[in-house]
Amino acid sequence: MVAFPSCCARDDWFLASEEGEVLVVAVGDSVEILARNELAEAIKATPAIAGNTLYVRTLGNLIAIRESD
Image (cartoon, rainbow, N blue to C red; front, side, top):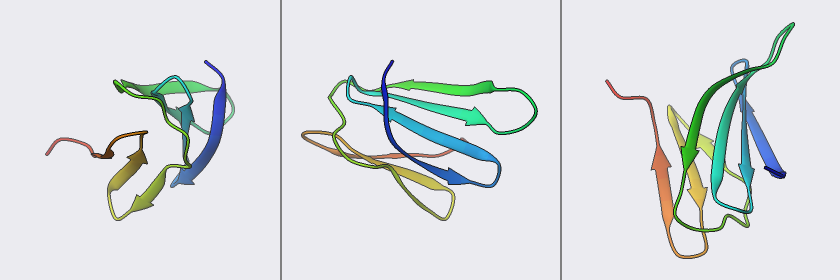
């Protein structure tokens, strides 16, 4: 995975790849992958965070990702 623009919320980094993968990585003394989201399309934009939702723009869709209740 080659990571492109990322964003940070709390102590977590959200990394998106052009291949359509979004990683949530914990920031701390060590690196820990908290979540891996495989999307069906390429990502060419920086993810954005609003409230508790991560928005990812793929080539054909705007996808909202959030923790389940």
